Image 1 (spheres, rainbow, N blue to C red):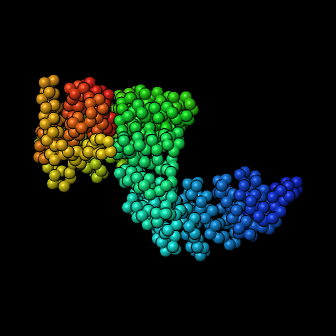
Image 2: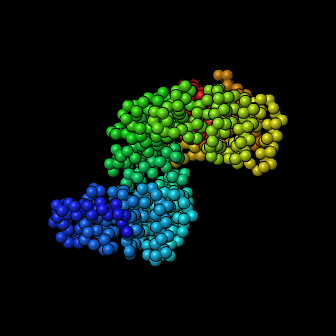
Length: 609
């Protein structure tokens, strides 16, 4: 029953205020239908409590349909405690009662409570409907709980809701958020073509884009445009743009931008922010800035995207100026914003500014630094030679397995560059012990020993790596020309236009040596296993192959843009600077860490990456 205090409050509204009671009765409650219409329009808490008081006084709380509408009014107002209390007082709650309360909990980010209600439904033999299942699947999406999601899916199949549009769209979204794209595709393909709508297509595209299946996302988008007469919404377009960003597909991104303009979504904050990120990741920082400047009321997400974009290009001061501008507009930064700011300081050598921002996070902005922020600071200190400080910081913070792998991997790379075998050994051992980044740990640690002249230990580590069956990830680079993407792997002698590519590289190497290029600087010497050593001697790194192909295939005056899956090595970096001077061409390379814009013999990173 209702608690006495609440009962007194409600009765007070209805009994001790006769004018209010008469007004409510006269204005809304001539019939049950009028009362339900009033509840549907309720948008103030006082209005809902007044209606609740009337129900209590008139004895209508026993009517399930009317009470359900009152529960819904509380849910809309985010008064979940009042909705739960009213639900608990019901003698015979039905499927609508349960589903309404579930929706309330899901909307407030309490999905576990929604799942508990579902279990209670089963015990009370209340059969769920399609809205119940859609809500439950959304709860599983929030939790990213694949195990429970599959159980809910089994109930959907058993009770015959497997062709319901809303339920299927929710299942596609759930499987996508749980990283099971194959299951999402199975559900999507099971839906009849004429039953799919923009929401279901968007769920499938987003699922692919969010799980590094960008090519599949673009293929589904093409299918949507081919088979469906409806127009894409802002969420679909943002997902497609994100897929283009992850792939570095500039032409596809521009085409999608055009679609956003045609359908009036280019001003949308979600789409515009995705476009900022896409142009930056495709090597068009100026386009990113143009899109950003057109956003009338940029949000913290928009600013963060632009801050990170500038940081990736080594434009640290611009990132910090954007951050100050954001603060001047009273936009509160979040934890991701500070990752961007610290990343900008790290890649531009702004150590003191970075430490100042780290120290101000909690005191000035109420954002508590966590592992990802400290990883940026360790990277920042390591890059500027302050390795002992970076090492002490790394040892002082508690991190999970994934964050720990990034942390010690960062420190290991910095140790190699500085020739600090002592720190590199501990960082390498921690990585190997965590079973994360194993191949990278072996390679980097062995290279560190080689730099220190400990050749025997370096070869021993390579042998251990080989006998353990651990293989180094092959270098891979790609370049987009019109609507085609050309992929190149390190040492691949059968690449596109192979003989022309090798002849051009040989010609360029001769011209570089005239300018003092020696190839394979001792600063980053590699002691690789046999096959890798052959590739090194031939100079067949994937980015060099992609560059030569680009020089042969892309007209003069057009910037060559190359994407790479690994960090660009020092030798290739030096070669690209010289080749940009020799050919009088601009090259933009996006590697694992950042962008390099080569022009007239120099790089925007100023050899600091």
